[in-house]
Length: 208
Image (cartoon, rainbow, N blue to C red):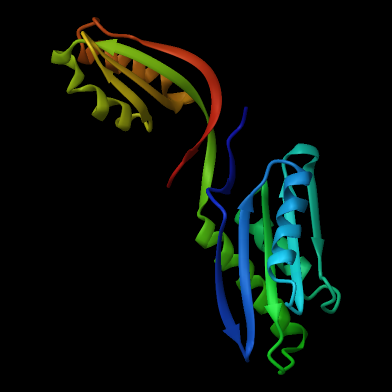
């Protein structure tokens, strides 16, 4: 498992360029079916738009696709795809919708507008790194619990749930590469009375 960049959520933003309205949308997707369904849903929502230009990149099969959707060749889909490539994201689909405002933008203007539409879509959806993490669990007494949250955070971990019974049970995830260092720090902090049980590996977003 290797880390990769994608977007955290589906989101959108928009701007107006010489009376043309541009709406940029981005969404995390993991399959071509999900990407196509997202594009279809935008087209349905914006059925009166002049163009719904799209591009997407998938890890599975190293797929990269785009469409100019009627704009002059190379002025729309390619710039959107280029923004995805330069941002380093994958498993991501972007649709930039245009409502024509009556003023021609020219080839250069279209490239800049669709590039900007893709950029603001990615910014709204927030680019994150998906890192392979261990899902982990530990139990400790109340005297040691006070050290645990800070220790997990110091190793880029995130607490998912905490149960307070006779002991405190903490379920959390942290990047795989930090697991052994965390366990050593945990042993030092609790005088060897507490250890973490590492479970399955799963991708989780790690925010900058």
